[in-house]
Length: 184
View 1 (tube, rainbow, N blue to C red):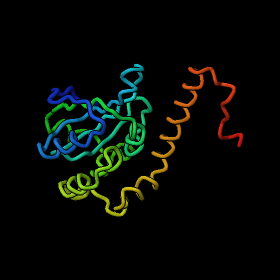
View 2 (spheres, one colour):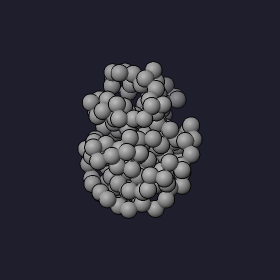
View 3 (spheres, helix red, strand yellow):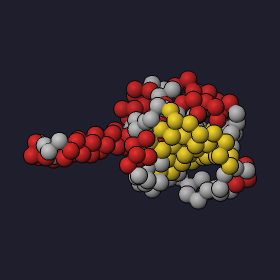
View 4 (cartoon, rainbow, N blue to C red):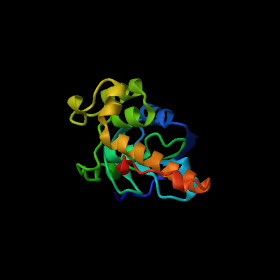
């Protein structure tokens, strides 16, 4: 996703991006957020999720490391907090000129639900979204149901846990104790 250079208007570190998402909605912020998990900052990895907003409502998501978009991009950083969250402002025309590529589009409530677990903020965001941006049938109302229905997010969490276990095993010289899930 090619974004125009924006003006940095807010930069925070947070355990979850809920207060930044709420701020963007309340301020009707137009631009984009860059959410980068702290482990990526320390490890020098390219592990950021870019989320575009129009009047505070999320529209497109793209993960810079995996190059996946939409809810897959959110899944790639879900549960990886704390986050460094930078908010950039850009002209509304620049955001509107970005193509709504299907693979990048997220439902307006998805970031609040999937990254922050905040169903009240998700509902506020859904209510503020323009007509046509919401798909009521696609998002389960129960956050636990939504979490369990998101196979990509669950797979991403499993992959992160496996990689962390392998890293710890190498660090503690316990590589002989590792058993891959495929061998069970």
